[in-house]
Amino acid sequence: PKINTIFAVAISINNGTNKFNSLPSAQFHLWWCQVCGHGGLGMKQRLGKAGKITLHVPQNAKIPWEINNGSGDVGLEAAAISALSLNNDSGYIVLSGLAVENAKMDSHTGDIKITDSSFTDSDIHVRSAYVTIKNTDIDKTDILTGSGEVNMDNINAYDRLSIETDSGDISLSHKSMPDDLSYDISSGSEDITVQFQDAGYTADTDGCKQGCIGNGKNSLSIISDSGTITVK
Image (tube, rainbow, N blue to C red; front, side):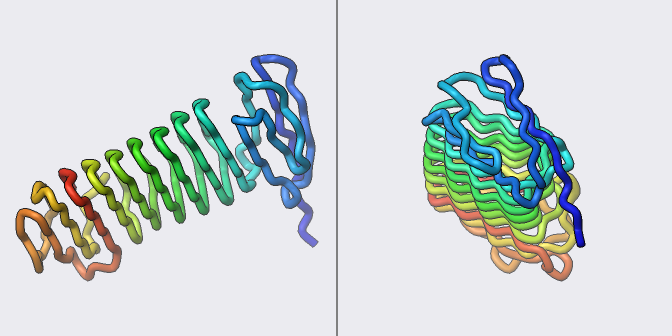
């Protein structure tokens, strides 16, 4: 039978004394609620009053994370996460050096920034906030925003990428030029710039760019009601 790894998690409240919990990884689920000052490690526990709370989790502990945040900033760094559920009101979210299998992120007015990470399957929904993704592997990703901008820089090849905004601008730059991609890019502003190599266009107007590179195995869909779109 498979033996589950037992690991320790350190909790530091306002740079105070650490508190350690050792649990089998299969029974470990981390949940966090900054608004009410509660959190849990396997079992629900009260972590104390509002303030700065730091959790140190071993990098090899691939566990699910559930975060419900109000107006405080949240940072996740150098962690392996099997499932990430993030519900945010107005806090600034920074994710760096993560390896995430499945992610669902929802933010009202708080910006989301992701760098130097990998996401196998992700769904990002913001109402009025910026989404910034840089130097990150994204296999299957859906991004939906209201009035916020989406900026993606130095992005590696993906299976499927879908971005949709109401009024926010969208910019996407690839780490290397796609060679097997079908694309459908449109904007009501009729302000679209696409710089692809060896691309065959089935539609090439000011407001719509459609076509295929190679066999079109992977897919890119970008839609904006009134925003400017730049893809290269």
